[in-house]
Length: 238
Image (cartoon, rainbow, N blue to C red; front, side, top):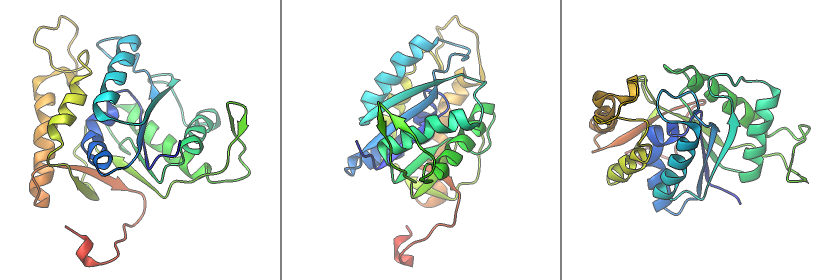
């Protein structure tokens, strides 16, 4: 199956938190989108790997993505080496996306920066014909995505561009709330963490509203890029 967009996240819920509105909008425009989670999030303060699996599947249905896979890398301890790069390369060659979305280049959680670099490096290597990979007994062809964009996560990084997600914020929050074990719940008896606070949950809305305010929109999600952006004409800019 060829996808238009493939979104990677170090943990289940990274993609939802960072770019669910963009994914929902692109799917509404007829694009095929998939998600690949690197780990099962087994080191999370709340919940478990099994619970996160169920939550990720529920969120995928809400988003309407074509496919969601989990590579089962070690939460907190995966590294950017040949073994892990090849696992990403197999996914890129399997789905042949034109656009790859991935974690923030720098962030509070160490897996976010590591995952960002791992995916970015694999996107380049995936285009090298002399790197041979096979999936389900079949040799894969080289494939390099046209662009890699990094969504914004914990830190308020200045975006290189924003996507108008007005009209998709309610569905985005619905997808995030599929991860019931992870976020604000006044009745929970599990330990607290930075992402379980009421302030964090409310920040999901006011960040997108603030990015929208700065861009003349109602709601927006921000991304950073690895190369200069290009437009056909000045009229393409909103």
